[in-house]
Length: 631
Image 1 (cartoon, rainbow, N blue to C red):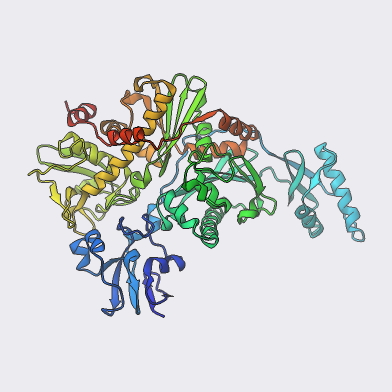
Image 2: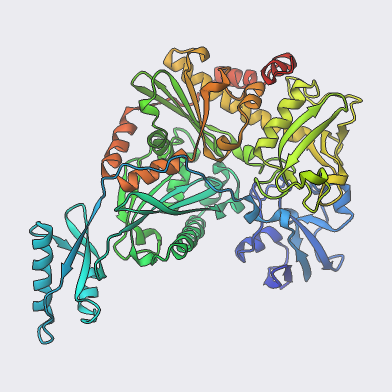
């Protein structure tokens, strides 16, 4: 069997002769990014062959050569998804092909929460222990706790009773009992404790977010984000469905790696705050319908075909241990309800977290993730739909896309006098005008929008999305032969190669823009409204916090409203999850919201296709110039 040494890990993996390299890396849990699920069109899983006999690896395909370009092909770069391993080899996975560099913190724009805890703490002085009659002593403890709580009888977790029976008398003269829903004793700790802990989880297609909360005080103690490890099996939900539905073991694998990532993230937050994970007793989880199914181990096949029916829509209360979360043995997992096949628990949480219901006038909420939910408030009615934006705004479908990290170009302006782009990137040394130690590496989501909008206003991109054939210095061609825009010159990049934005990249933005525009148009038509009737637009999600509203308006991604009416609201799905964690009434409110929301499905007829083709058009150059204030 061929052995492949992977650097910088220094790990050796064994593959079957002819086995696909990406599949082997996946099986060995090696960190590599593959948003196209190994279909060979994204070019993100590039690796460097440091040593191999000529026959050790399969011959590069024409598609692979085109994606990597002439310069990389000359330096032994390969796409892991296109390589069949036949003999021993040494492979290096560069930083730009790593999953970890795609993680972005999911920021909450809300810090204060109204609490109505699902738990109550009872501090009790334990009766003297009867060493000769342990069960009799336990009966006296039960009676004491029920008297203090004022509830007769209480249900008791077997885990709590076993903990008491095994406790040390000197350490357990006093104890704090946790009651859930005023019905059951679910946790016990030695001494008098004033705090109880829970986690709110937002499972995004690309990013996971966890918020560790104090259930008593109603505040967030720590938060963190991590890449959803399932991105190796496809950046979009359709790819995940296709992978999971083939057999049960694959579905179990997707659940396993996701829950392991959540356990790791929760453990990290607990360590930061000096809290034992065994003392976390309550969990609220939200996510789109596919993520909801995969984390619960449910078959997502029904979501991959019309009429897109989920296995279950209702809110769930199950033991957290059932999905593998390593918390208190009695920890409960509450999952908010789904509205429809592609309007999931995260959309319901987003309504809670944004306060959309309380806004005066007509308002639109767009949660701009890989799967984009759009919710329109009109009077007392809520209309909702979902559109496939893909991970383009997170950089994953852009040739040189990356997350907002060191070296990521984040702001772009076109200089008509010089015929080039002026850029800023994260970590740039402004004092040395971009020639410091940190140089540009790629484009994050905010830059992607600004590049296309600025080029459109400059007349370098036509409304149909084509890059013009021009003698302007920044118009060039990529190694593949397609037209491209040079955004950053070779002298300012980390590898000495110019950063190009290709025609394919423009098309990816165009498709996302088309999906967004169609979703908004359908909701407004369904509600009998015009674009001018919108009083506010709220942008949720990571991209919503980074986007330039003016550039989004210039492209036509957002309806033509006063920019002052557009507001970023952060991770509203995560905020809604925190609110439901800390307030029992809001869990019931979520159920009511689902009944209230009116789902507008994207039609599959010719009229929709006509809408979509029309929506692919960008604004005209004159319109873009006007919005950006170039007039």
